[in-house]
Structures are given as structure tokens and as C-alpha cells.
Length: 184
Image 1: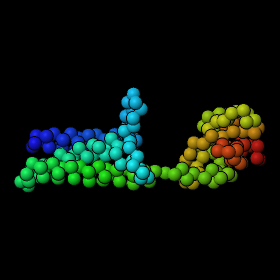
Image 2 (image 1 turned 30 degrees about the horizontal axis):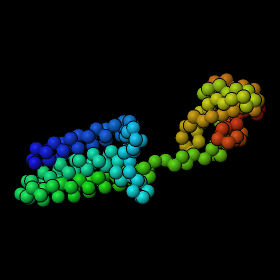
Image 3 (image 1 turned 90 degrees about the vertical axis):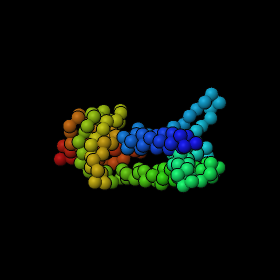
Image 4 (image 1 turned 120 degrees about the horizontal axis):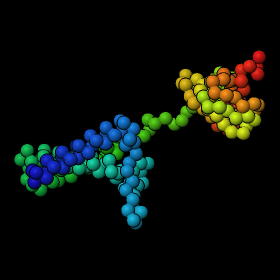
């Protein structure tokens, strides 16, 4: 029993550490959906606003199970109570992981950039803008105190890379720009 608890505690902890490192590197930002031939998802929706049983919460369960079993063993509990404690702590760990992932998902930006705040701003053409709405280019412009790369179009002549432009209006989610020298 002791060996099984050590194996699950160490493997669960190492897997959680690897997940955390990958998450910090931007690689593991979503749960792995495991699709089998029967198209079964690893995420099980239980009616809450977020899935509780995911790969990440399962790894939390495995680590918690191992550490819980070790606590029971070293406290002198009987084999049955060691397993009961291991399951209880494993479930608590799984719920903690699910709750943390849910709370972290709420921290994501809701995309609160308001493109109307770009109107009247001066920017630089990063990728050439085709003439008369025949396509879009990219403009670098500071909007809401952040430098942004935004799609832009011209209602006049093509605007080459490096030109200074003024944002005059919006066409959906695309900036409509004109060269500054047209304004002078």
C-alpha cells in the first residue's frame, strides 16, 4: 500500500508541476480533450458553469489520493481508513483544481478594446493598405494606452508601409484611415 501511495503522490505531483510549467509557457492553457472512436470527451459537464471532471482535476485527484494515503499510513490508520482518507483528499484536490481553473478563466480579458477610442488617433502603417477598400492592411496605433496592431482600410489611394495615418471612422471592426498629408 505504501508503495502505491508514494507512486501516486509523486506521479500526480510531477504531472501537476509539468502542467503548471506548460501553462506558464502558454502551452497548456486549455484542458486536453481526449476523443476516442466513440467521440467521448474528457470533460464531463455536471450542470455547473464549468466542468469539474477534467484531465487537470484528475491529475489533482491522483496527487491528493497519494498524499492522503501517505498521511493515513504515517498517522497509523488501518488500510481501509487510509484508502478512505486518500479518496477524500483526492476529491478535495480535484475540486480545488477545478475551482482554481474556473477562477483563472474569469481573469481572462473580455476583449474590452473599444475601437471607437481609436477615431482621431494617429498611427503608422505596418502592412500596406490597398486602395479604395480593396482589402485591408495593418496599422500600429496607441489605443487605450496600449500599442495595438489593427486592421485598416483606405477609401482613397493605397497607403504604403511606414506612412503616418489618421483614423477617421470605423467600418465594422476595421479602421478607416487616411494619410496625414491628405488632411493638410
